[in-house]
Length: 171
Image 1 (cartoon, helix red, strand yellow):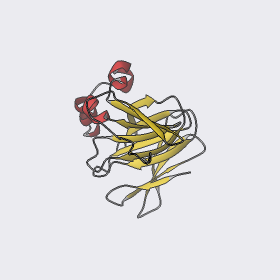
Image 2 (image 1 turned 90 degrees about the vertical axis):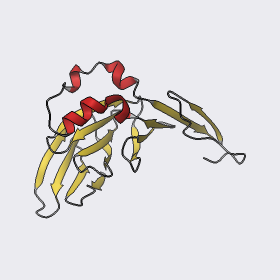
Image 3 (image 1 turned 180 degrees about the vertical axis):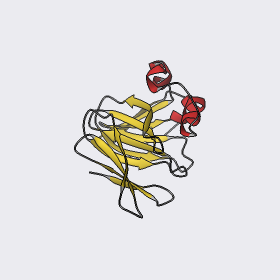
């Protein structure tokens, strides 16, 4: 089980063995919503650093899901091929770092999905997740950093370098 507070401190998100993420009102202790859709137990949960309506969860089912915490809707998902061990939003919130298997990904989810994603978070009508072609999510700017016993390499899917290995081979 993992837990995370929203940036405004009003909501606590927690993962559960029934494959859900629950949103709890910190003032009352009442369950506000149950986010369902993972096929296995979510292992990690994180709120967007500035928007309490945006939540990411990563699961043993290999998927990262982005949720609209206000509506309980999954607005975006991506299968990373291995269980998700860790998630971290960039402080500006436009990049999500994902640890999956022995790889570290940076996912520029916001750049690829900005129009649809922001409209959905703001509650405007937009295409359903299932209506978004998989290729749009799959080309969302993934960069991979892999490491085995001090030997690091990276696969770049966009134009920015994510990490380099210095002479002492620590990253």
